[in-house]
Image 1 (cartoon, rainbow, N blue to C red):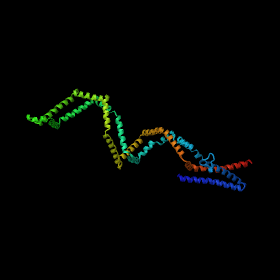
Image 2 (cartoon, rainbow, N blue to C red):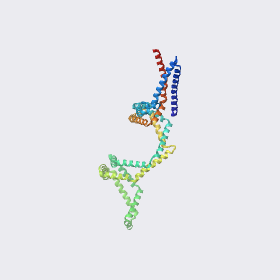
Image 3 (cartoon, rainbow, N blue to C red):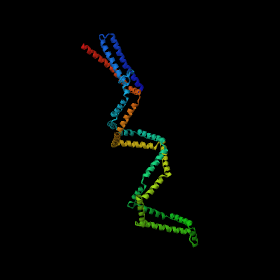
Image 4 (cartoon, helix red, strand yellow):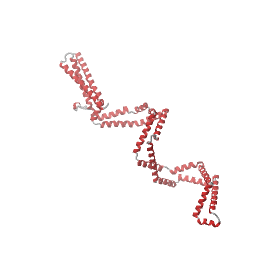
Length: 426
C-alpha cells in the first residue's frame, strides 16, 4: 500500500475504535439515567467494563509510540525510547531467521539457478536481449575509459611481465629442445639444400658476376684497367670467376651436406652447444641479454606500439558496436545459446554450477549476514524518532487498532460475566 493509503486506513481504524468507546460511554450514561433498574443494570455493567477495556488498550497502543496525552508517564513512548535496542534486535532477527546459511543454501537448492538459467537462455529472444545488453554495456564503458591511463597500465603491465621473464633461460631451453636428436643438423641440411639450389640458378650466377665486377671496379680500378693490356675482357673475366666461385661453393656445400662427420658440421655443433651453455650458465652473457631486453623495453617504439594496439582495438570495438549486425552481439548471443544447450542437456553441468553457487554462498553467507545486520541496525539507529514512529505506526498501527476494538468488546463481555457472578453470589 502507498503511504497515503496506509495513513487513511489507520485514521479510519482510529475513528472506529474511538467510536466504540463513545458508544460504550453513551450506553453507560443511559443506563445510569435509568438508575440501573432491571435490564439496565446489565447494560451498565457491559458499558462500564467496555470503557475500561477500551481506555486500557488505547493507553497500551499509544504508549508504544508516544506519551499518552503528552504526559511523561514511565515506560511509555517505548519504541523511540528503546530505538537502539529495537534496531539491534531487529537486525539479529533478520540475520538469524532469514539469512541463516542453511536456509539460504536450501533456497538455492529449491530455486535451481542453473536449470532456470538454461530455460531462460534457451529462448532466442532472451539470448538476443543478453547480447544487446552486453553491447550497450560495452558502449557505455568505452565512454568512461581513460585512454591515457589504460595505455599506461598496459605498457607497465607488459614491462613488468617482460622484466620478470628469463629471456636467456627461455632461449636456452628452446634451443636445447631444437637440438635434441641432432634436429639442428636437419635445419642445417635444409639450409644447405636451399643455398645450393639458389647458387645453381643462372640468373643468380649472372647477378654474382655483375656484383663482382662492380666491387672490383670500385676497389681495384687499376687492376681492371690493366686487363685490357693483356687482352682479357672484364666481363669475360667476371663471368669465368663467378662460375668458378659458384662451382667451388657448391662443391664445398655438397661436401658438408653429404658428410655427417664433416668438420664444418662438428664446428656447427660446437658453436650451438657453446651458445646454449652460455645462455644457461654464463652470468655475464645472461646479464648482457637482460640488459638488451631492458634497453628494448625502454625504447619509445614499444610505448608507441602499445598505444597503437589500444587505439586500434577501441576504434574497432566502437565501429562494431555501431553496426546493426555487431560481431560482439553475435558472439554473445551465440555463446548464450550454446551455453543454454549445454546446460539443458548436461545434468552434471547444472549440478556443478549449482554446487559452486552453494559453496560460494556458504563462504559468503557469514560476512553477508553480518553486513546486512549491521546495515539494518545502523539504519534504524540513524532514523529520527518522529520518522521511526511514523513508519512503524503506518505499517502496523491499523492492526494495533483492533486491540482497542477487541478490548472494548471483550471488556464489555467480561463486565457482563462479573455482573452475573455478583448476582449469583448475592
